[in-house]
Length: 79
Image 1 (tube, one colour):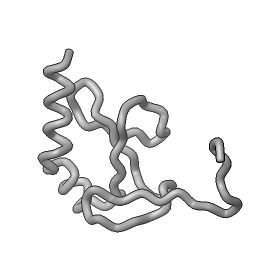
Image 2: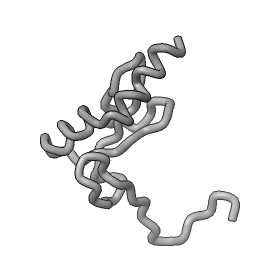
Image 3: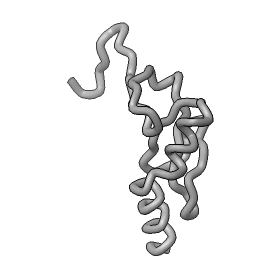
Image 4: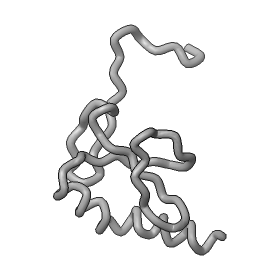
């Protein structure tokens, strides 16, 4: 299987704000960098990403997500 994808396969990701599953291309990727949650629209930043809808409500929930914020704090402490 070495990296071969099935024809017509669409990668799905889960919005961390509302929990809906959407195609990866329809969600915005965020990465913890420099101890902050940063938007990665080009999907080129290194690190573990989380995905979120583009809706303001979902972004607000993501910003208040304790697990994500804790990861950001750990990134600051690890420097």
